[in-house]
Length: 251
Image (cartoon, rainbow, N blue to C red; front, side, top):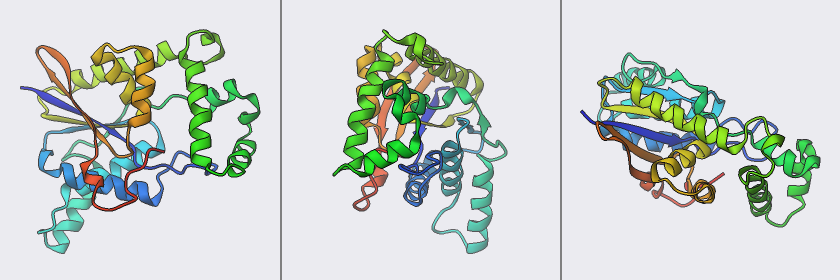
């Protein structure tokens, strides 16, 4: 039987806050919309895996709860189903695998621009820009290129090749853990998803960086695991976010 590994990028996090690692209100809404859209696929024997970050866990809670709730349920049944979803898929609570964690963006920025090891300095400089999001994107793109370029691997606790290998190992472990499950729901970040897709497509490193910029918050990427190995099926699905303006975000 083919198992589908569903790679879910977390909902919008708290960009610009002192603690980025939490969902914004919009991020929670995005996660619920994704769960409702994926509900027809969910089954009692499914497994769920979270990275070790707060935004992964909060996305899983919102998404899994919405998977279990149907509009035609009585109020009491809806409440019970929501509580079950928050605990996990059926009897299987999400397991934590920190190999699905995002790269250390704080260190990557600080190695590129040491003054930005001070979060207050970074925030102040971004606020002074006419478009803080675009300014951050430009800064972060340059920092990522330095990290992935290979010339400065010794500057980082986890250089790009080690990060890429970690993510590939996490995917293989999830496929092995599936057993007879039809679905494995994996709540992670854009970096691991891009690294996994790069590996499956045997694409160059630069392509992984470009892929990561396109990933939408609370998007859905599918990988099929069968006897022939792992195959990419869909990438960055986010049709569930077209209901109204403002739901599609990237940071």
